[in-house]
Image (cartoon, rainbow, N blue to C red; front, side, top):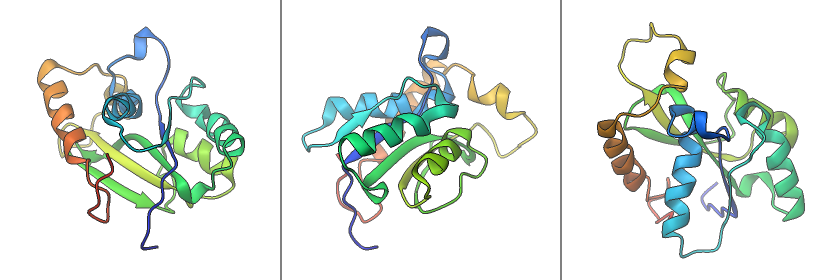
Length: 162
């Protein structure tokens, strides 16, 4: 696949004050920043279904706007990637991310784009995921997060994403 044609960008997260600025809301934070900079036409969404049921919203949006899975970019936290780093991927398994698993089941395919933003604070993986994903960001981490979002400004093919 040498051409990326994204039409729908979905940031995964949880609605509500208690989840604001937590690592699990990385997708919400990214699409908020993206929406401020958009000059290109995308549909940008923050499903209010809670992260583990994101597939319901993604399926409804894809049907409503007649968007194929390969034209969807899902933005989410990834505990297997170190803080400040990110990876684009296409057609991969959920790797245990329940929000992504919900989307794979709803769309009946894993052939969509993912922007996986790292939330792992250190190379040590002894801390349970629950203690990391719902932790609030420190001011220093928010600064790093803003830098990471700026770095994501290029697509996997080197073309500007936003």
